[in-house]
Image (cartoon, rainbow, N blue to C red):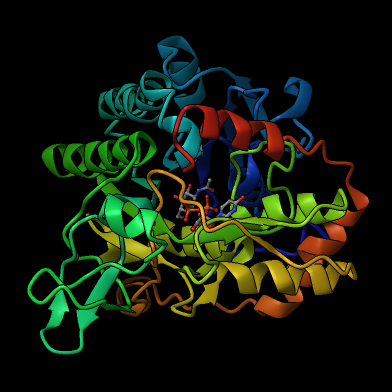
Length: 383
Ligand code: UD1
């Protein structure tokens, strides 16, 4: 499958700004917008952690590029000139790293969004809609149900349980282990890392500014995204890219906890489609909407599937160690996305994981995960 397999339904041509438009999701979105006939500008800082050597490998040359940081007001002003729809994808990504680079994560993800929205407010006669990338990290842990007490909201996992390798959260009423259920958008929010705090601030800034000034805004709460163009050399990227990189380097995937943690892996093509729908969907304005599949996969299962797809005989290394800030399970309720956007994930997970593995096999990623995990361990953030 080629990189250009994501295309959108034709709509009225727009002048779109994509922040982070050289990154993983942003670059796929730019390609889809260009293919659908929209005029596209990109604002991207080309942060070397995500872009090896500061090079924009996935830049679409039919889109204008303003290289600059979201916190650089002049760059944001230039990027917004003449724009009528904004897709805000630019952010630093990495729960683990954010635990010790607190200021940088809050600064880029929260303050960067603040600067962007101030400049959007100044152009509110022109900007019709802002579609912002939010994340399931704003929930903290997912939703749970107790066999005896029904839906419950467990406290963050107890250090003694984690030390005893008891990984499941407990019922706040009877202390029994609870079972995960789909997380819907009304679940109380609860960030568990500075990255999550920054994303929560970013989402809130976008929605609150929108409702205060009458600008249509939509926050898309992405579940765990995977696909071609994940930043393979970034040790803080998503788990699918990390495992594929480790396997490609002949190493067993490092699995935290017991590998039974469940995630909702959504393919980047579905995420792009959700953005295109959010650009126009009349009922979406003002809403936060999960973008996931509603289906789950365990992290150990993901490691095994990728090994199979890469044709390597490397069993996951189940470390029984805990990474600070990690939640146990989270998968989406997809009802609101269906109702407000007409969105339903369509990608075939097995085929797309195979596609990711094929892409990784052609890449030459520098595996920095060992060094990154050693750093987190030295800081007591993996224990
Ligand atoms: C991820 C994203 C976050 C996004 C959220 C929702 C990253 C870094 N994080 O958070 O931006 O907002 O999904 O879309 O992309 N794991 C291992 N070994 C590893 C790395 C991770 O076992 O080497 C485990 C983790 O402990 C965790 C799971 O895999 O249980 C997922 O980790 P990760 O990919 O970092 O994603 P989330 O923390 O779920």
